[in-house]
Length: 344
Image 1 (cartoon, rainbow, N blue to C red):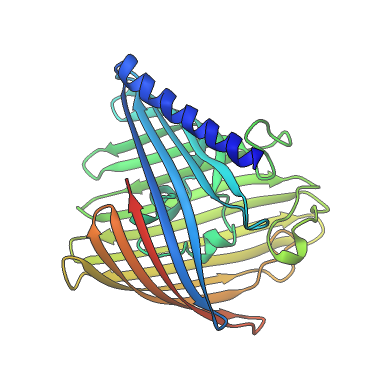
Image 2: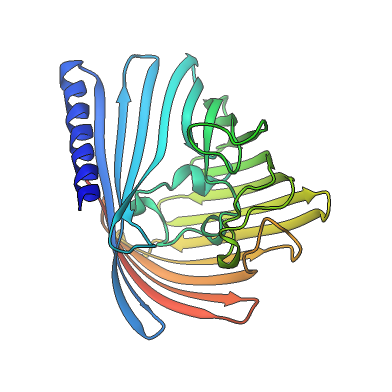
């Protein structure tokens, strides 16, 4: 009870300070929140659950300096009775010149379109659940570091990200080894609604880093150093009626004892607006892991999704979704989920 009270008190203080800074210092500070609730029928059981509550803050301190902060509150899945607090993003951005920026802090790693675009405000996501490549942590979701960013450059709206940060196995306060992760991505938006992008990630996972891929290996540290390279490609097309999104991820993990091990993941989403408020959609996911990879101990599987979104407004969306998971191990599952997500 004391822990819950302390966290609630800190949240109230944070909000009050944010309001104070907005009014007292005349900064352009905006505070938003997002929340979602779910109902799921799975394994002959109906369950109700609370998703995430997201506190989202942006502030323009000067014409050169801006801030973005995102903190998520959700039930701890281990205790199922207490909230956990996760600081997802803390970014300070400095405008160098034109549309070129220096960025510092904790970022969603700019590797995939989904990871850059759909954060923790579930009201904006086209589906209820993230694709399998993100659920399985095939890609590193966050990076704490420093980088450069460019947006809407030239006639084709070129954008780029170059980020150097703490590597896999590190925390937000310090790196766990001497190696640094490097992320480089580039995209273009040549036509309205169309975006094409590619990205690259390189890191070294040091011996002893705890492996979180798969339930049988959550508390084990890897026995030797792994060099990881990730390549991704993305295609997105969102217009008034049609939405198409597809991404592919290729991961190469190399160690001295096992050599080069390759894993792949992909997903494709398609939706069509049949009514101003109604969008039926489908999605296909596939993740394929190398059998001998010491870092990935997750199961090769594929998923099929069919669903429908009803948009009451831009910030109030109801989604109904059927999902079938086909595991290589043979433990197939299916579920029906209803989600109501709002922003405020």
